[in-house]
Image (tube, rainbow, N blue to C red; front, side, top):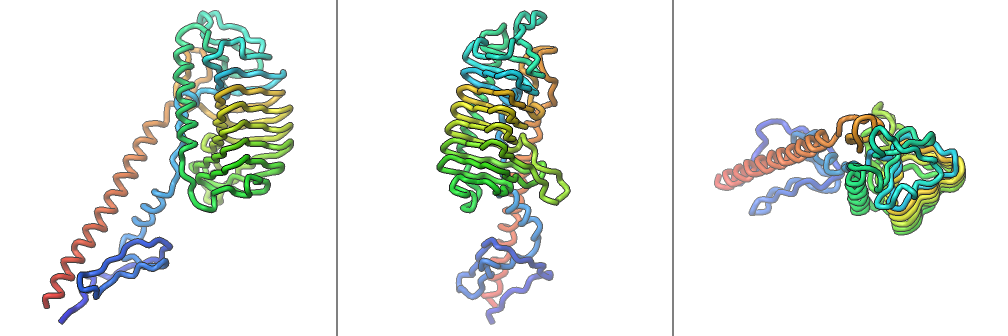
Length: 346
């Protein structure tokens, strides 16, 4: 007789919206159901973990550019008084491009950095004393690398493509990568909803225009894991950025050209610009820096140890776990095929 082999143990099943496996013996007599709502035998939680891991978004690493609240290539200007929590810097342009700050050179370090009442950290420029110039060159390179990384991410789903045709007022965004082939603008509130570990990347080929009094609001997703961190929110802007009077932004702005923050506007995050940044009585508050400070002792904000080791360990563990799960299912399939061959000989 030609018998279908029975599972040696009861099969625990769950329903999934993913086509997982399709198994057919040579005679075509047995097919594991694999419809859009299929059933998968055994280890359902492992499979769910694999699908969830594959769908997560990796963070955009800023390198030493993450030591700055504002970093630019061609300068920073302010209409006093702005308030900046964190370091500012410009390179390859000289310190004369830091205007409106009334900088005072730090003589204790022979001029490696300057200070100003408008900046709670310190100011760096390409013509300051060594090792500042080389450190800034590295930071600018890291800025460019981060921009390229963010711009190269793949949109998470079709629903994340060209949301609102670029007019996103009132929209709620969950974790993932969003892409627009246009300008993006909003004139009221938008909501970023998730947990403290979620990653949000907003890509646009045009400009980011935030109208006066508009606001980015961070919301927890109800899981008890906090609300999104502004350091995990990235705006990759191929054009320029305008943040209107009294408007509020959250996140890291990676902008190809310039960024302008108008009177009373604010940002919890960073501005990393490949041209210039202009401030008009603006408030910029940077999150904790991800790597050691740029200068020597006493030259800036004390920062935490880099998280890069943890990220590497997480990636290795995730890949290893994925391979282990794939190997498990391959092994089960191999055993199943052997059972079929034995059954067909009866």
